[in-house]
Length: 443
Image 1 (cartoon, rainbow, N blue to C red):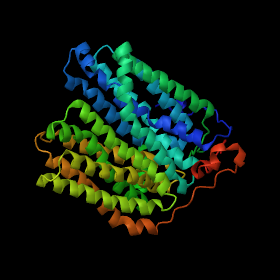
Image 2 (image 1 turned 90 degrees about the vertical axis):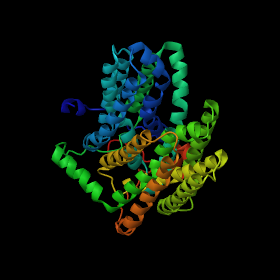
Image 3 (image 1 turned 45 degrees about the vertical axis):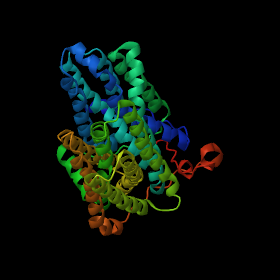
Image 4 (image 1 turned 120 degrees about the vertical axis):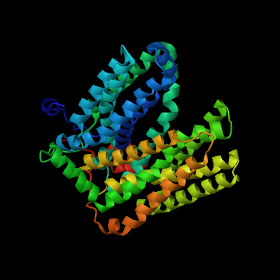
């Protein structure tokens, strides 16, 4: 990416924004990629027919997006720290909009596969920047609450995107799904440019050469709090990927439920994850992120192995399976935001790189899990069920090994937010997380 583009002067908006506005805009940014992944899925048969290729070839458009998403995580980290949050964000979103339009007019499937890779490289910045800006705008103690709210946006997206995509595709064919993405993200880009404050002062000391970048990632990875909480959190979060990839085999093949029943079960279980992530906001009023993460990760391990024992012994019928999975996913809904907040807590100057590495961990672990499930036998659910307890146990082992060193490592708190009169923050009276939002101008 040419340096002259990234050095573009993006206006820094000194206007003060409420915590609710900032959280909402960060939430919108965080769902760019989830919608890009799920919104066009209902068009797979139409795409296969239109391009004259099998559905397995169309699936490569999804694979190429995941590859771009994973690579983009580590590419944008240094850029967000070197140039501030907004310039890379603007460039990435512009790239996403342009390639979305290109996808709508792709002449063949192989062009579409390539464009999807580039689209992911552009859209990835939205997810990385949104997590990094939580660290910019909110004190460390409020980060888990804010991340819980962002995860509400992310968690709801896979439920809404296919439905929205179906309506759009029925109205205008599969190209309409990509054009709709372009229009929506263009609107988000306009809000970013005009209303989102710059939360991080550009740091010219951050090098963009491969050696220093790798060294920077290495220093983050060596930090006891990061590798402990990011590693444990990634394996805990793998439970959600296992559910998404394995639920059709568990319920449709294993219990023989029809499509409508499966959709209801999926929505119920996803609702458990979403609801728990919001319950986490209230739990944080009584307990710290460290306490919640440790306790609910241990509970996740218990439910994971209970699931395996019950399945292997034939004790769990459909209702029992749903109940155990519901409890398991509720644990994930609480461990995930706390692990993320704890992992990026020590980083202020290089929060962008830390956020990128955290996302790479989570996405990479989930991708490996999904590939493993794809190789499983549909008529044998036990190996898939075993993944739930195994990944959670690995996460707990990482936490137990690194806990003492992580706790002994001090965290330098982010500078206190710029004081703003309470009357300028109507949401502040009701929500401490929003009251603490840092209203940045040009730092």
